[in-house]
Length: 187
Image (tube, rainbow, N blue to C red; front, top):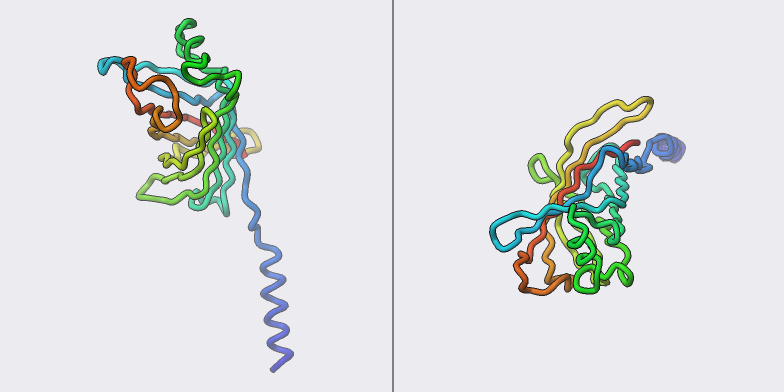
């Protein structure tokens, strides 16, 4: 009896050691990705912009988005809206204060499937303030890229400027800023 119990434990241990429990890491393909935003101005028009320098990594557990890890960083100085004077104003102390706060970061602490999308909760740091926010993730496909696998991911969400002391409460800008990330990630 003791011998069969020991053999059973040995078999379970051996089988477990051959299972791949290591997360699979995906890195950003910057040429095919965009981290953007839009904000309502004067209640009548959406102003669009993006961060030209950013990075994203995703780690999947056993190929599943459920319980995945998502990390994003963006250089605040790389903000671009297509209007140089507006970009310079956004980089100033009135908004992002890029000399003092050079990065925006997001690190997930949970990813949960809801229907065919994912709720990505995590800590978002901007302008020296960290808040827990929820983003929506949507897998947009899987493709073969040379010898590697590429996955598409769209992440959206709303961030309130007032939560991070960005800009004045008035001035014609809405408080809510919609984040839009269209990402290609490669294994």
